[in-house]
Image (cartoon, rainbow, N blue to C red; front, side):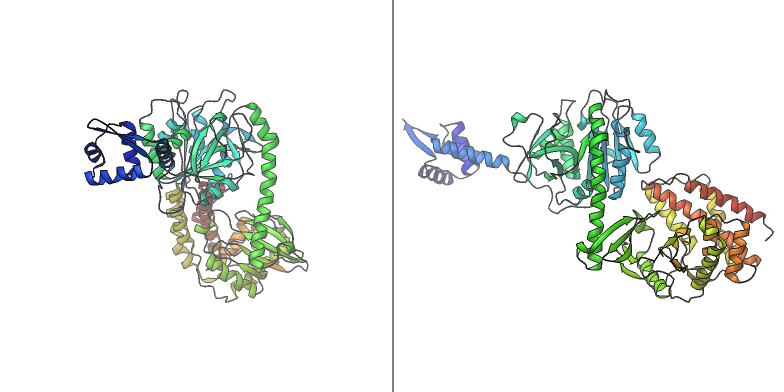
Length: 616
């Protein structure tokens, strides 16, 4: 109230107490009391001229009012009561015209990838489900890209030559329903950035780093922990707190305020960061500053060459080191050891998961890190139980650590480990060892509590595929009906549940230095028909008719009767169908499996015809 009264007096030194009472909606007694207080504090002086009383701010009063106004002006309102939330959406701004390139910068190549591929992979890795790309210049590049990637939507800005990035962002509003990550399409940056940004406690957050010296920096000033100023003109700043790089986290509330602010805009060239700044004059917008972030922007040919020759090689080296450090922390925590005891970490492959050889002092271990999206498809609780049961029974190496929440597993390294491949798996010696270990497993009475039911898995995978927006292969529904009908034929031919591995690819069979065979990776394990594992081994390794006959003979110790051969063929059909759906799910999440999925689907259809025509 004191500030409001000083403002009134400053605007009109002849104002009456009655008028003050009306303006401030208070009593005359309250007005009189406030005026006395201001005079006693030497904020105003009072003079009379005839019957008129005049009030005037003293120099101290004018300074006091100026300070109060400035303080009020710099106060920001909180948009949110809670802290950070999960982010599932992203917007990529890719409309801008670039005279230096014949395509959007996102389609420029660095080594063996396109920039857009890297950005999308970074978003998918951090569980972003919906990606909106605003197109304009050479829009057909992004439109074709979106057709090949589910949950990517294109919005065209036909006015891209005559509008700024805020106009483009406004066009994306029909797809944006929640908080989102905003990225400009001409950027390359370290993988860690998106994860750090998503986990930042501020729901509204711009990313800053130290000035790049590019000559086109968007300088930023921060006050009281919030965005205060953005400009490319360095002369406007009392101080510079960093450079805005073009990656931000924006809450839906902030987005609505930006749209409202922009609705009154008459400057079509307005960029989103300045609309954001306008809103930030009244509301708190946080920041994330990463001083050592390696990143690059590609606005011209010179910057493109610099990114290829200098920036990305540094990013690549740093990301390898970052991954190693992350693994060290996981091993240190899991094994309760000091980090200096970890002597070596080497990646050793894996199709779905990442596997590493870890040397601790003089002992070797295998660390398994679960792949992206596997948590929806694999029950880690049952995998943990079955892995330990298999190890206790002597089928797998000893399990040292298993985290069923994130799928991280550490097991002892098999001494002199030799992993089978589809070629070595075909030798008579190895077929015999595989037949023996599978026979031992199926007759073990290991108390597995879960069942691997392929028909239930088909329904589950189909649901996940639909949820992910995946595109099924031609005539999928017709083929599915034919596959599902095979369930009765399985039971008619002696289907029986036994402990099973259910993923008998060559790479899951490992021999030690003495020739002993182990069976690893029990992700899909559970009770199933014994012919499933035999069918999978034959199918995955391309066994010919004679090699398959040998496998069955060594497994049973006799010739396989017709009912077992029928179940073998049915399981091959079911496996190809199931794993083809698995592939479209993985590809919907941004991974690329080439023609793996379609080839399995087509083989499934061929084997269906063979089953219908067989005389077995």
